[in-house]
Image (tube, rainbow, N blue to C red):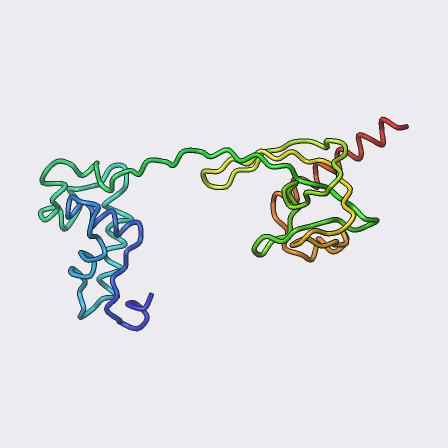
Length: 201
């Protein structure tokens, strides 16, 4: 941090510090301004370290050890008997269900992939409207924060790579940044292939 390394007057506002300040003020609002106001500008690094340590060892989330706190006499939440209320617990966002169909389209040893941000993944049905959908391969779930994805994986034939997609050699996947969803889908595809081969024997 700049205050510790270069003695610059910047107030720290990590989770521990927010907890200390919200209890001192008996409020969750205006914490950046309060942090800047209380900052010891003569020795900001030591002040920030002390405040972080106070939050990590004394002003604990569940059961603050107020008798050991050097600033308990100035703590408005302690004076009001409301220290357990701060910081206020935020309500968890509702889980959003997202349903998608992923296409496993192959051309020889190449697989049709799309790029999303920095990762490669299987294209969704909506990305290849002209695809000929074949046999279902399987289903799996994948959660990201408050979104619950329900994926259906199907085999497909795609004559031409749609915009945003390209044919990629499967042998190159080990060298590419691929999504966890792609790994799960290919694991499902490999199990399906093995099962299919066994049925045909």
